[in-house]
Amino acid sequence: MKLFSNPTQDEIKMAAKALKDGHLVALPTETVYGLGADANNEKAVVRIYEVKGRPKNHPLIVHISSIELFDKWARDTPEYAIKLARAFWPGPMTLVSRRTNLAKDFVTGGQETVAIRVPSHTLASQLLKEFESLGGIGVAAPSANRFGNVSPTNSKAVEEELGKFLLESDQILDGGQSQIGIESTIIDCTGDIPVVLRPGSVTIEMVENLLDTEIGERSSLNQNVKVPGSFKTHYAPKARVVLNGVTGPGDGFIALEEIPTSIGAIRLASPKDVLEYAQVLYSAFRLADSKGIKTVNVIPPAEQGLGVAINNRLLKASKGE
Ligand code: TXA
Ligand code: MG
Image (cartoon, rainbow, N blue to C red; front, side):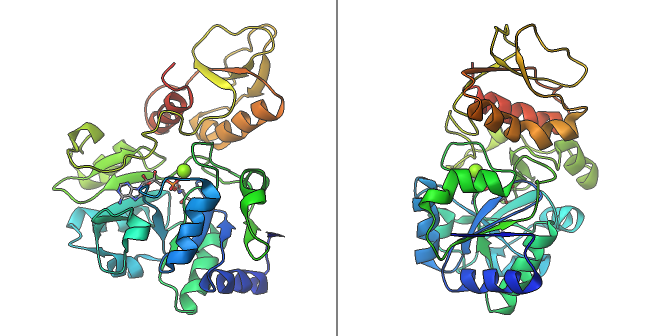
């Protein structure tokens, strides 16, 4: 595996060619780093599952450079989905829509729907454009971590997670620290109203304001959809994560800057607001593991706006404790 730091235009072209030739390329996005493969190449996509150690029926997000390619993958798209796409793409939002024939079972996990995203990170966008200029139509990319682990927000974390599972011909592109730090908002657009399947930095309030209507909750879904993070150990570090617990000596501690560190605890992050909280959370979890810390006590932010998504990930990481 080769790692390219701040790749040049030529190196981005080579990475696009590698994708087109069926190799895997880990790429930065504004949310978290993804492990990319040509979404039309079954062999390449199967390798994503092997490298991640992920169950086969767990569907992937197809990344495209612009809304122009949306209709290649999605059909019977409701008007509200187009509105969402126009408002929040490129950006940290994934839309789930009915699939066209292009979206094969090996990408959708056999579901009749497909998840699509247009990322805004410049390097991701350039890579996708180059890939499309070679005839590619979309890049399937889950977060670039082993199944169940915390998503990587920089290239070093990708290397630590997947380095030993990647082949010589695979690549990692370094595009700095992911600005948002948690995974995209996933919105199911197959019904009369949108349903948020995974909260993210495109918040429920933002969607409701745009569409001028209340939107559905995940519990209103009655179809057999693989809900992201529905496995209890998702987004979890090795350390035990406790929310609002009693901090003991040697425990890790994560809280907003205004909250003082408990006596004897090891401060892992002091974000000044929710934006920074999302940015640093996964690195703080990784730091805990690198220090061999056994228990991390986390004081979650208020459950509003981006705080909803942070609380969602914290609850998963704490396995409901
Ligand atoms: O921010 C992100 O979304 C990152 C970056 C790399 O784009 N990607 C990401 O992918 O988080 P992943 O595979 O780790 O999580 C995507 C989730 C999966 O848990 C999967 O269940 C869900 O999206 N998903 C994919 N296709 C779906 C579908 N057709 N219906 C419902 N959920 C779907
Ligand atoms: Mg993931």
